[in-house]
Image (cartoon, rainbow, N blue to C red; front, side, top):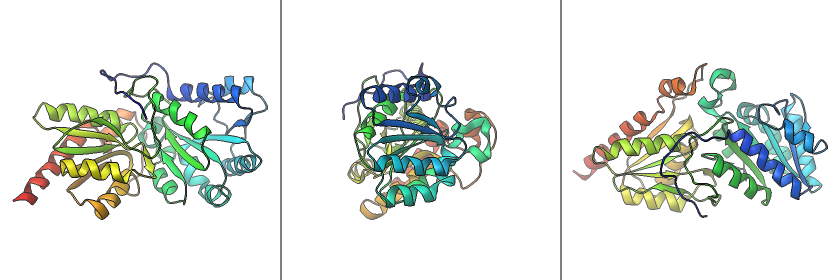
Amino acid sequence: MSYNVVKTRKLEEKAMRDVYAATLAELARVDERVVSLDADLMNSVGLVPVQKEFPDRVIDCGIQEANMFGAAAGMSAVGMIPFVHTFACFATRRIADQVFVSGAFAQANVRLIGSDPGVTAAFNGATHMPFEDIGIMRGIPTVTVIEPTDSVMLEDIVRQTKEQEGIFYIRMSRKNAIQVYEEKSTFEIGKAAMVKEGTDVTIFASGISVADSLDAADALAKEGISAEVVNIFTIKPIDVEGIVKSASKTGAVVTAENHNIINGLGSAVAEVLGEHCPVPMERIGVKDRFGEVGSVDYLKKTMEITAEDIAKKAKKAIARKAEQRL
């Protein structure tokens, strides 16, 4: 793991879907075992040019996600390396049984890409807005759950999983992300990535909430509050040692995620802290409700998962820590 955080955060020039497609094409050029399956969303994820280059290895399975995953599992059984994509709502709710039986239970080797998680589904609305996908996938034995923060991390994760065995669920936005990491950064799956060191409170974040947590930390710093920001991009297996180390140092914790507060990052971190390091903890996430139609900014405000919301929770966690010391 070798990464650097950018000095100035800004919207990336390339969309995450374009980086995903380009990386997949590069892998396919050097390894004929790499194959891509999609459920009628190849244009949405940028795979149309890749299919023209590899017509026999980029397959549009149509709107039959369960069959698509079963086919991918079968391909892996004969030595191929399948990457499977559909919207995150379909990649989890619709094919959970296939992931369980044909995938994890059968010890298959498949990378499942779920795009547009949480509020990033935006104008596709409530039915296409998964706030439960992490919970579904982390409940299936042996499945690794990863949420890349930006395109730099996404490219590295895609390359890494190509060389590893097992079922991987990777949730990613298709659009342009806020760049957090410098180009060529690398990461270790299963290990947290320190983004900003601090002493008063730790903010454990994932996905789009990492950039928002950094904005919250900047705002808190103006008030004399030192917030540590830790990127938990691997939600399963979670980095117990890294979480305990940071929580022990600051004594107060906030989790921030673009997911239901039930069964997501907040639940995973709470499990770790409950067993190893009980400290005051507050959670930022969607409060057990369905989504709606709107822009990402509107939805973040509606769901109370903005940088301002994170900063408020950080202050609350710090106040609770102070009360315990009285």
